[in-house]
Length: 367
Image (tube, rainbow, N blue to C red; front, side, top):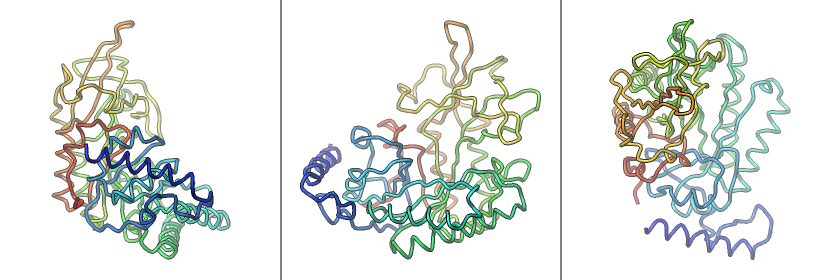
């Protein structure tokens, strides 16, 4: 109740203040001018992504636990003022396309724009996201590393208290010892440059290396794959205290082409050279699933450490299989993060969380 009341009061005061200030974006838009000061925080992270939304959604967030939020494809001064008032950093996720990696004039313009946006909106840094595949030994891998260094150096120079976050896959390599999803980046070098690494520990079956003749459904965030992947990062001497374990707050729903004794065979969809992919699944946010921890018929899958739920679609009789984490299985991964000395945990995404989820999230930040 306290946090919701404080959030509402902050927003109302901020809205009033915006009607009285100049439209100049360089002027602090917050009612409390100290809310435009950068946020300093050096402890473990509770890091969350936020999709475009408004106060109705933000009011469900537990800002007492959050340390950093990354805004995806939008910027909102209301949310910045609110977050800073409650001592939460605000950064933006910015995508860079590798087709421009050799175009220095484009890079200079792109980077200048991102710095200007961060300054104008009183943001706390940048979350650099790259998703294009690179073959092993491709010279663009080194160019990407240099880009990351340039972004980090420029942000630290222009916004001295800012942070730079880079997204990395759930594992440094897949079963074939190649880059996950075809992304053979120089992750070890990048890890030494940036302030934080966000491990995208979900969509583990985007490239599902199954039998070529049959594609099967499977877990979104396998506990044992997560365990092995963190060990792989450790063995490669990654700075584990920089790494944030990102976890999914959504389920994957598969339509079974054929169903045989729990095995759900799905349609084939190629993704970056692999014949099977979780891209065929529907995404169901947790807050769209009633009483997620108590769905009738849900059972625990010992092989993956996650849960499975089945239902039959009434009109055509298709079997659907849902793979998901519950609050208790997510907590097991929180413990993994702690045991491996990670720098925190993260959520994709805060918009998807239900109110009960916050009770299970650790408290790292001092209130």
